[in-house]
Amino acid sequence: MSDFIGYVGFVVLLGLLLVGFALAVGGLLRGRTLRIQIVLTRHARRATWVGALNLGFGVAVSLPFFALQAATGNDGWALPGLVLLALLASAVAVGFAGLSLWVGTRLLPDHALPARLALGAGALTLGAGLPVAGTIVLLPLGLCLGLGGLILSYLIRVSEPESALN
Image (cartoon, rainbow, N blue to C red; front, side, top):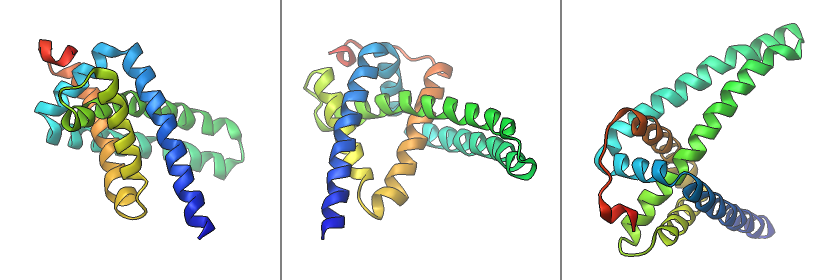
């Protein structure tokens, strides 16, 4: 029972940290998070596929560097793989803010932007913290949606309606 309570405490603490992170990224990159939200509203299926392909490709390109590091014993081979994974993680992190705004807008469409960001980030974190369904379905889906939404926000030209700025 204490393992379950520790797990719930970890998920709640992670949720609070990710709510703060989504609010910070949403405040710093307000235009980009709004563009990601608009892209996800219009092209969610395309964003899922684009994110899945790019996430898989990024991980697949970084793995040979770690294999070379293990085979040769030279730690310098791991550096390019780590840099690629760090770039991928930062792109997923920015995409998470847009995904949080998209989820928060679907849950609370009439509230202010910070409230939608906070509720969306909390809902995504608590949903991904579910033991089986969250880690097998929702977490990979959120990673793919966030990364794909970020990539498509640079590629697809969208006009920002006035209702999204509130």
